[in-house]
Image 1 (cartoon, rainbow, N blue to C red):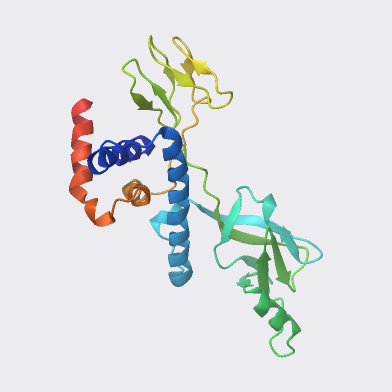
Image 2 (image 1 turned 180 degrees about the vertical axis):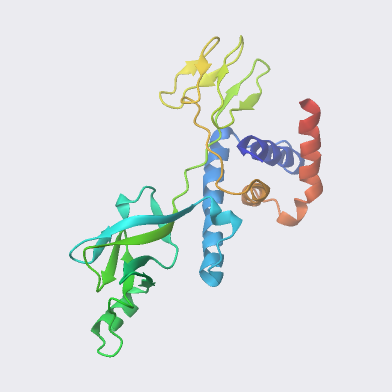
Length: 251
C-alpha cells in the first residue's frame, strides 16, 4: 500500500461518508505527516514498555555505528550517519578484550550514581545519559563505542501529475514520466507548471513513502479518516477490500 493507495482509499471513504468531500493533495500531505508521527510515537511507547523492536520500527533502525567519545567523556550524536531520534539500549565498548555494555540512565540517575561512593560507575560498569544531541559517558574518555539507534523518519510525500482527464496520478517513489498532451505537473521546487513533453525525472519526483511495513500503512489511512470525523468502527475491512477491487478493475 503506497501513498497513492492511501490517498485513493481515504477519498473514496470521504465521498461515501461525507457527501462527496475529498482531501486535496496539499491537505493529504499534511495529514500524512502528522499521522505518521502519531504512529511512530505510539510505536516508541510500546518499545519503551517491552524493549522489543517490532517490524513497525524496523525501517528506522540503525545498528552498531562507531561513535567517538572525546576527552571530556562526550559524544556528538549529530555526527551519526542518520539523524538521531532514539537510542537502542545499550551501547557497548571493548574493555580488556571483552564487550561491555554502557547502561543508559536518566539525568537524575546519572547524577546520583556519579556522586555515589558505593555505586559509582567504572570502566567495567560505565553509565551514560543522553541530552539533546550529546551522549555523556562516565567514566569513559577517548574511546570508540558501538551505538545503535532509531533514525528520524523522512517526511512522507504524495507527488503527482494531472492527466488529460483532470485525474491526479500518483508518482511512485523513483518513478519518471514524460507528460503527454493535456497533462500538467506542478514543480515542487519552483512552483512552475510543466506541460506536454516535460520529463518528470526520478530526481524531480518528490514522493516519499511511509516508513512502515506495507500491511501497516492502512493504520495511517484510518488515523487520517478519524481526523476527518469518521469513527474507526465505520471503517471496516470491506471498505478497503472494495476499494482494492475497484482499483484492480481499472488496471
